[in-house]
Image (cartoon, rainbow, N blue to C red; front, side):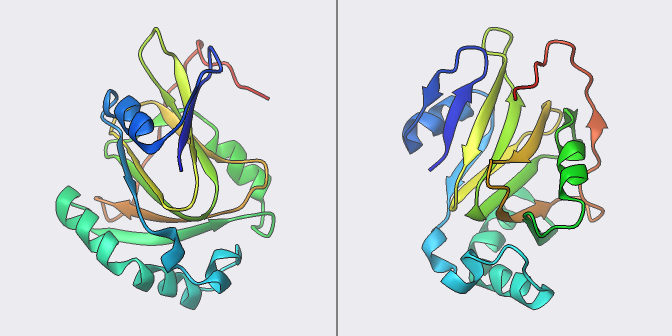
Length: 181
């Protein structure tokens, strides 16, 4: 279940309905998939082979095609990140740069945990959306954000794209952003 942390105040928003209501204000899509559909073998494997990634896609075929039909996605893939990932720290450093995209950025978390950091209104500032298995989130185009991992640095996520080349990140320098330790 996703939780939101307002970075300026440390206020925590919990419960699917409360999270969805908060994210709706920012036009952020929040849905749920059944995380228990994925076999334990795949849920606990953060170094998936290409065949295993295809198994993940097959497991969630209905959900993926439903989202694609509703929102215009053309292609999708599975990303796995963990301590096993070569150059994980360099990749995370690149991910943790605020940016925007010309299309929405969507992730369906099927194992592990991650965080989208999204810029809200001036009175709210940046907020973290802490994601767990089954959480599906789409950050709207042109919304300043970045994605990172939680402390255990393990995630498996389905990503969907409108453009066949995937997302192109446009840097968003923001002197108001304060990185948290």
